[in-house]
Image 1 (cartoon, one colour):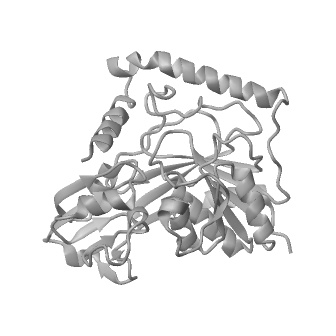
Image 2: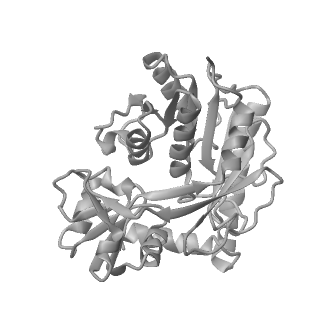
Image 3: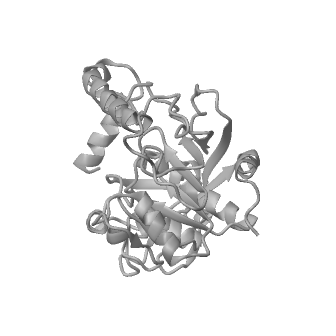
Length: 346
């Protein structure tokens, strides 16, 4: 485990309970809350106005920090909308990428320039994806380039005020609200429940993982739906070859993950009956160089996440396999989305 990943893991552990370490960070959390309130007042007073687009905008994001499952939710939502007859495009910040200007994400993009999650969404859905620090600029560029797009999905934008939205989805995992405190004393990016209508979330999706604890209860009184995360029965490599996980049972495996919660991935592999002789936990959005360095000399076969695989070339190593995540969402969630959007335009 890298130093950064170890520090992130320690902070995540302290943010789940109201212990002495979390209490020591409360003054910083109060300062953070004050900055949020100041920013909120700028929009409530009309000094700043969110950009409104000529098409509906759905925002999918986290109220808690890291690893709650917003990107798999975005992929599942885009695929549902495509089946319904919508022509969605996706915009994202592109965390970890170089640059801030609007940029298209082709399927063969370099993850260092596009960000790993936008590239994963592009390859999984085939929908046009644009990234920019200012999501409204990314959306406007996308609509100019793809006039057929009639709906925008914003990946990770609940705390991004400059882009107006029509529907907002908050994604949680089994951690619930953590200890209920704001960053850095807790997991919350913003107070919960939010009262900042119309930018408050309108739907809640709470995910549990196979072999993991049940989701912690949430307050807020919003329509809430469940989802279950599991691993696909087959792994895939950078060339598109597939391998049944069952065939790896009994072998000594190495697992690597550069995601917000590496241990969750490792635990899911173990729950599938796989024996991990070594685990390599890297920081979230770890770049290709960090992944390649961690894999150097690691005994194979090696298992990773899809988010890691998009950053590595086909020549990284032949025994590297990504295990896709399968997200089983309550159909009532999609029905609630459809009800709020109405039918797609003819």
